[in-house]
Amino acid sequence: MDEITGNHDGDPIVDTDAGQPDQNPLWYKDAVIYQVHVKSFYDSNNDGIGDFKGLLQKLDYIADLGVTCIWLLPFYPSPRRDDGYDIAAYEDVSPDYGTMEDARAFIAAAHERGIRVIFELVINHTSDQHPWFQAARKAPKGSPERDFYVWSDDDKLYSGTRIIFLDTEKSNWTWDEDAGAYFWHRFYSHQPDLNFDNPAVLAEVLRVMHFWLDMGVDGLRLDAIPYLIERDGTSNENLTETHVVLQQIRADLDAHYPDRMLLAEANMWPEDTQQYFGGEGVGNGGPECHMAFHFPLMPRMYMAVAQEDRFPITDIMR
Image (tube, rainbow, N blue to C red):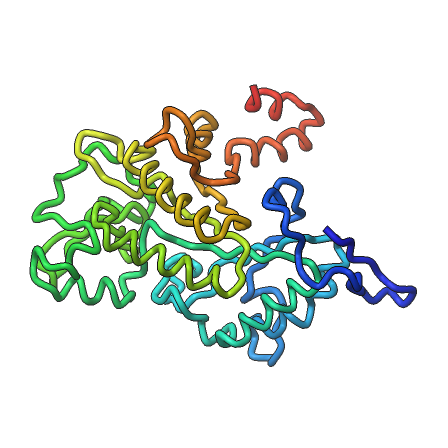
């Protein structure tokens, strides 16, 4: 990748041979990735909220840090009851952060500096304000609209599934008065889970993925992926069927965008997280994500610094 350097005045400049990130499909292996929350980074219009125009104004500063990839947290329209991970529209920008044109301008400006951009794609669930869910709860049982989410006439199904947020949730099921049924949610009760047993759901997710990748986004962080599929009598985590869904997503990505990347957010022990790379013995044997977080390692890095001892790191890496 062309190096971004500074001139004698300290202002970052872009190598004249740059203009776009290089085309190496393995670019992510040595990328310097900088996480940015649009709403808190830089406010361009003094309304107290960061925005895309502010982020664009500070791109040279980010480039001067040596960053080669920017990872944006969710910026979509949202009630923001879960800091934007409760998405109400997948193909738009929250008005607080700007417009679609602002997002396009940011991506183009980042690429001009040789910086890639990755977005979050929350595919396990939506906000209960998403039009898909609003249509589902009003549609009759058995209808295509209702089948976008996971429903039950009682709250006893999948009883072996742990509740993630025990401080706020008493069940993974919530009664919906309009639907006359319970809907399934692995996270908050305002975040209904999508039904990936319905092929139409995967088709919509792929369409959304294409929307952003066609705009030039270089990769997608797939949020909460261990929970995509439900089967009674299981923990409903890391299921074979979930890996099959992810392999279908990866196959579509490789067919249309071979230079892009998928990052797995799977908050699991290393032996389970490793499965989200895919491969022989996992799902149908195809590849899944290119990268994955190592969640157990993260706090141990701080422990090692605090204790001035490498053991917390070497222990979890064995």
